[in-house]
Amino acid sequence: MTTIIAAPASPDLDALLPDDPVALAAVANAVAVKLAALPLAASTEGELLAAAESLEQARRRFDAADAAVLVEISDRGAYRTAGYLSLHAYLSGGLRVGDGAARRRRVAAAAIGRFTSMQGQTLEPRCPATAVAVADGAIGVDHVLEIDAVLTRIPAAVTTDVREGAEAQLAAVARTLTPAGVRTAGVRLLAHLDPDGQLTDDRDRRRLRGLALMPQDRQLMSRLRTRLTPGLRADLEVMLQSWAAPGMNNPDDPASPTGAVESADPAVVAAAAERDDRTPMQRNHDALHALLILARQQSPASGSLRSELVVTITDAELAAHAGIALTATGTRIPISELVRLAADATPHLAVFAHTTGEPLYLGRGRRLASRAQRLMLFARDRGCTAPGCAAPFARTEAHHFPDWQDGGPTDIDHLGAACGSHNRTVGTGPGQWETRIAATGPHTGRVHWRPVTPTTATPTTPPGTGSPHRWQINTIHHAELLPAPRPDPESGPPASSSDPPG
Image (spheres, rainbow, N blue to C red):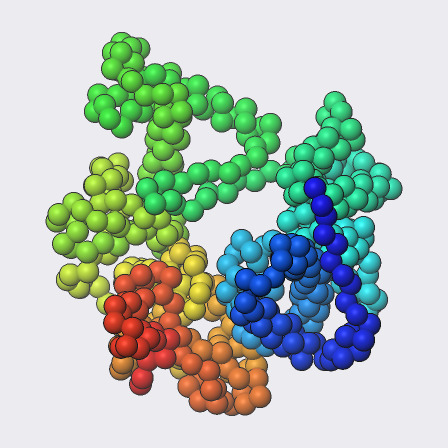
């Protein structure tokens, strides 16, 4: 197997490149555009392989440059200028890379970046050998993530010099291995550092514990990703032994006992067990669901919707028992399952048909939105209305238009759903957002956002003025707001949904 070594950049070429980062980034962008447009049919196989290796080396070196830029943005808080509260929010929403890619780039920057201390000193990278390998173009972000994951699992009792040596070893092997190979090497390294597991203590277990509910797939099913502490595992095993016993908590058997097997009639349990054809995994699932239903039924009532099951559907879907309902936490539920769910606990339904007699216009007499107003906001907004925000309605607050302190009334047509982070970004200063509910245009009644321009914003700038940015709406929670594709290419691009008139 022949290895093609990419030629280093010429010193003469380096002298021609600008020192201004914006101009240099523009040159890199122009290089990428020209390279993508070049005809490659006349190139030899060796030239193509050399170009591929050179591009991969450049891509990895750009990972180092990206980390340097992100560190500077983080140190200065420059993301606030664009209207975002955190570096992650800027990457995910501002650069539109998404939460997963934003997390990976932040983790990589934290490992190989040179941050500034509180005293103004430039700190060495947390993973110095890894940073050098990335700067050399030998490894990329995927390698860095695997190295970071291994270092995170090293027990806290391991000394600093041993930890530093482990990082250097991983960086060295990463120069010749794939990211998967680094993961394998990391497992062996961890086994060497703590062969019998005695170095792992409660600090490590508390640090590594977690439970994540993964997104729903096309079948509306979800996976759980979790690492349980020994205590939680012991409690879970005891619960499953009781609640997931054969015959118990079977949703397909109306005569199946509910709750713990110890409190059920043994004869009824035995008869239900004879009819039970579920797998052990299915029994575990049903036991957990039954336990959560009981917990919800026993939860005290509150004025908030966050701890209650709230569902929005159309009256036609409810009548036909067909379609998909949406909960305030963002879960999609088939109507057929919603009907069964309502038999165990009566959910709050926001049906798009008739209004209720509850007051939805409270003026200045009350600052906080009422329960009826929150239900109506969920029916209309479904989640945070800020552009690109995927926060479900259960994590939102009632945002006033204009703000309450500026005289905004607590009326349903002057309220919109906004998560806490975006609610705090609304203002008239640089790096903040202004909001409105459109009175005219194709999206009348929807909440619109746009960043305030730093150069024109002043403390006295009234909402809706002094900003050349386009008004934007959030289409994440409303697939029906996305522009429909036009089959005729001569008819032009679809109409934009981000800049309605009015």
